[in-house]
Image 1 (cartoon, rainbow, N blue to C red):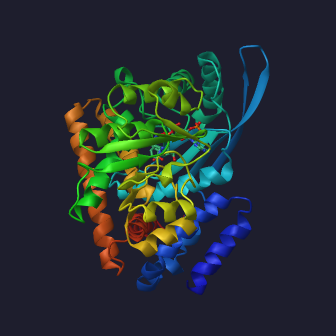
Image 2 (cartoon, rainbow, N blue to C red):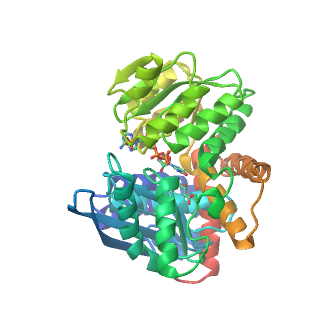
Image 3 (cartoon, rainbow, N blue to C red):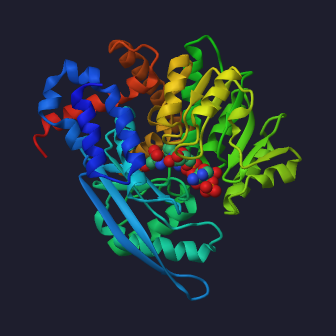
Length: 446
Ligand code: NDP
Ligand code: 2IT
């Protein structure tokens, strides 16, 4: 790495201590950008990267709420408004006990590049709370969401910042958040995406991230003369993204043999299909966070405390959370003949594991490219809200497919242009960067 890139990474670490996930996300991106900066010294003199690693604004606030027993709880709320060069801040909210500033900064940073790749006018942001939805009643979740929005509402808006869901935030939470926003702001606008279909939501948004990731995997496989049909998939997680992916894999004739949770993974040799997919929704809604329930119900293998990457599959789709494929997992996948890894989650592969995969030269796509279908469909929801005109399922799905094929082409073309053919990580980082960097150049020093 050049001295400049090394210093940039060292400065980010020194200035943002105790934020390892943010360091990881920045390192992965800026390492790919070395060739671009060589070709375009103007980005370097305009300090584009130095500006990109500094959020435009971070909002951090107290969220106090009362549980069903009358006890008071205090959580921490955040919104990281990372970059608004190409549109209003856009990105999800995560409710999970592991949430902290560093995790949200990594997610907001990734979101900037991802949103740029979608071709839609969206800047990057991310937010959330260390609130743990596990075991909470509907009323408790509602009171928490209302308290969270009571502070957040003054910082967001349909033309300034449009949050959506992420881990722990699905349709129910978006409903409670939207109701409170409407009450406080006194307006009915598309300030959140992932809304219910009767009150401004878009068809296909719930399935979009998983669907998009499988459309992307299909394009990747096509470059090697393969297809989803007849392939075996390992999927991790059993949440929103995993659910959408499993449905689309089945529809396209593939077979999913694993799901995972914090408690371990299930191996279903006959495939997760039919009523078993509906059961995923029940498991998620139960807020028990246990995938063992699937094994108990359908009598399949359960491997406690293990990740699903030891199983022999053609394609791996990590769809749970960050850093869930480590070096040993990568070696295991390769040993078993895995030909393609398509990230559904954000940054599920560690930097070290990625090096092993990169050396093996199998197909590998970073989440910022292959999971962009979720936020892209959020962008389509924003368009429909602005027009006050909903599109049909076919229309939204057609646009989603078009966007995913476009992102795939962009990654392939850009990586080839910069001398790294087949490297989706470089392609996504460079293409995502160029659009935002050019907008920042045009808009002066801000
Ligand atoms: P869900 O809350 O629906 O599901 C998340 C899944 O991952 C659950 O099975 C969850 O179990 C598991 N999980 C979460 N944290 C951990 C952890 N620390 N260790 C082990 N398992 C964990 O979230 P989504 O499906 O929405 O999100 C999954 C991934 O996809 C995340 O990386 C998210 O950022 C990304 N993503 C989501 C998009 C969306 O539109 N929803 C769009 C693009 C990316 P548990 O809760 O028990 O830990
Ligand atoms: O990581 C992501 O892209 C999301 N959680 C979706 C964000 C959005 O605004 O739809």
